[in-house]
Image (cartoon, rainbow, N blue to C red; front, side):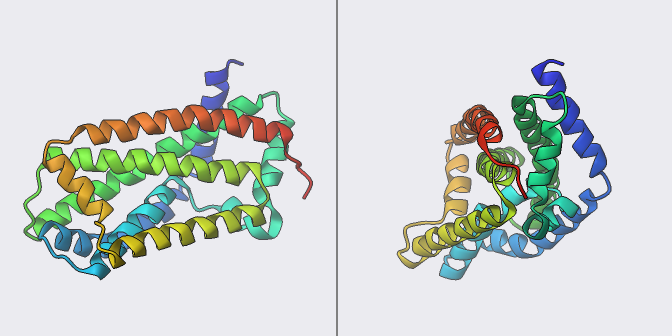
Length: 241
């Protein structure tokens, strides 16, 4: 079985298996909209508040990449049962290579993330515009594309720790990741350096549309590096639970 054929097989298998569980992601998107729509509306209206600045950055930086992950039993049992390690150990017994596993997992991630963020940004656009904000469809599409590129890049890092380490190490990586982004978001607000969400949107409005393409280009590089790193990690890690 060729590289792409095997990777697509794994991705489609996982997507089909988690089909109904995607409803949890849809519910999470709705929950996320409750917080981001008022915040983004204030941002577009030019509100300059430290809490708004901190909250929008923190939510976008931490939560948007998480939309690429389906909430399922494997995720929920990661700490207690080291479920990702068990799953990878089982896959390694199949006639598929570590590279196919790595690429298939990233394909699954990219598809789920794209679908979830497409829904999220469409609903966000409609709701914010309905609240009276003057938004351009083209600018907002590029804005969404920019954040998809960011989210995919960061989520690939999550996948590396997810499939390449024990459940406990994966948990502590996530915790450290949140603390770092919290510090960054809070520091930008406290020292009034700027707001990433506002800056990205205003940059696109001011003609810097290429930042969206740059974000996608970075994510493409991240896919290439991620596949290689995950493959090597799968070959060298222990699968004892």
